[in-house]
Amino acid sequence: MQRIKVQRNQPPRKTPSSNNALRVALLSLVALLCACRTVPGTGRSQLNLASESALSEQASAAFAQMPRANDPAGLTRVKAIALRVIAAARAAPKGYGDPSLPPPAAWEIAIIKDDTPNAFAMPGGKIGFNSGMFRLTPTDEDIAVILGHEVAHVVCRHGNERVSQGIAAAVGAVAVDQSMRDQSAEKRKQAMAAYGAAATLGVILPFSRSHESEADQLGIVYMALAGYNPAQSVTFWQRFSKEPGARMPEFLSTHPSDQTRIQKLQQLLPMAQKIYAEQQAKAPTR
Image (cartoon, rainbow, N blue to C red; front, side, top):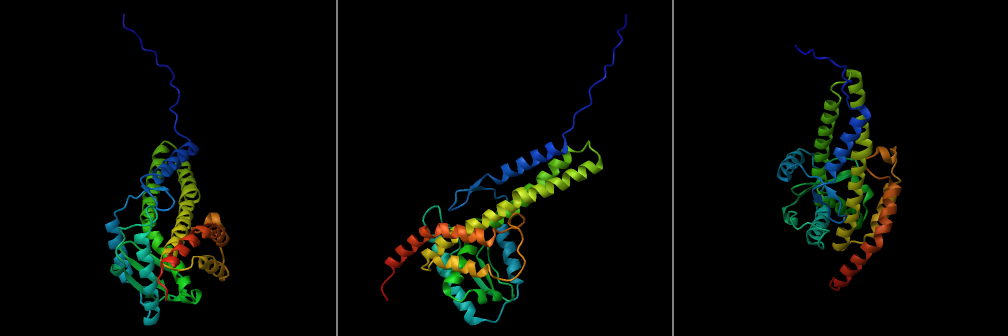
């Protein structure tokens, strides 16, 4: 006798909720960003997915397009300080420096025609110092604060990490979208919006603020090794904090608040002052 197959009602297939999908994607993103390379000075693990040579080529092309200010005296001053800071970063004690940095003479340094008080260093050996920064840097020590911080960004490969974060965030977005493929278009849209906000506020911005803190920490070491008094770092940021303009809440910003930055530098100052005193003791009597 032929058997009759009885069709039982199967329970509906479970699909991940938007909260679960979001949680999985964010955990994956954090795991990716907390792996691979160790950051000098802090020992934090970081992810570097991008090619350093490719980043250097892109930086060189962008740097070549920036308008130069006609300021020979300013350029001479910035270049002299930058060369000392770069040499210090290359020769810093193990775990703090990067001997693979281009030698000082290989760096291209320019005064950028821009009234915004800003400066930057790029992979491959490029430094730009905006003309608008001079009004906040009356002393060589002030300039050393800025250049130490910017060179530290290069040593820590923060540019590569930011690119890698973008890649990892995109992978997470794809994971969220795929895990929600059986949901309605509206739910998928809501999940993607929630992921974007959570990734930005919970992962990307905190990492960006940690980059700034790492650059501050290494920067005062480099300026001290280069023979510049690291105490000026606190003075500079106190002056900078009085600059007019709206400040975003710290949790929405790529940078620590001025007060947070000043407090951390004050905590690091005894260590940097000791290095500075040792360098002064080694310096020949003039």
